[in-house]
Image (cartoon, rainbow, N blue to C red; front, side, top):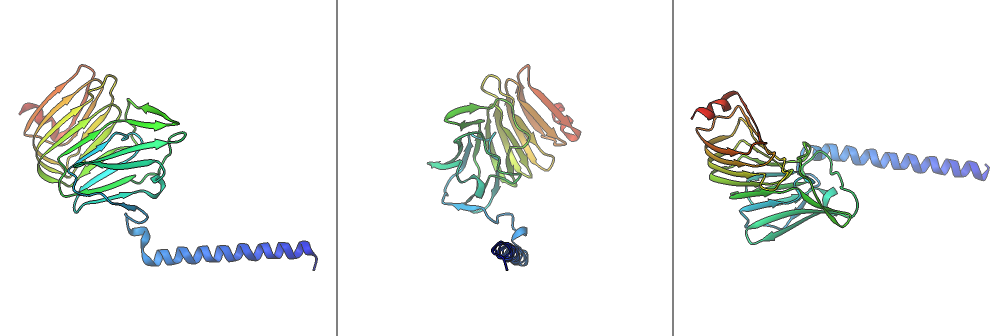
Length: 241
């Protein structure tokens, strides 16, 4: 057999062995059911005893916050770019990209659970190629989701191009300030599965508020001239309270 034929045969055998090993690994992962676990692959971070979350880089990362024991998990693709730190009772999430912004896929970048969330602060500033980049308009693909809390109150401070969504919460009083900086075009979305007894909202510049079929019995809000407010279904009744 010629040397060239031997090399070709060896290459084919190596390829077949690699494919076999890959298929066996996939089959083992399927049997374990890893693909069903939403936390699979996420890296646990050592943070606890916080009641506030600040996401200055909310236009570059997606964050989900739910009630439960203290837990902070980071997407494996984000470890090189996303920075987490704790300042007293506040967890802070920033992003630094050596070059252009990196996309982490459709899953949440950071998963957080905590017994109580007193306040959420969001902005839309990250570092790219050594320079701060300010995003004044929100991105539909990036958001901070607060879901499932039952508590007396929650304060939200939203700025520039950040998107905040509340879903499935039971709140006595929601206080939200959005769009304090000039040119801010963020989105505050309150879904129909929330139960909010009272809310005080202050919306500035080009902020957007979406009340999706949600009746808030005691709603007070101030809105600037360029603010966009969208109310659907039962939310229309909030204006007559």
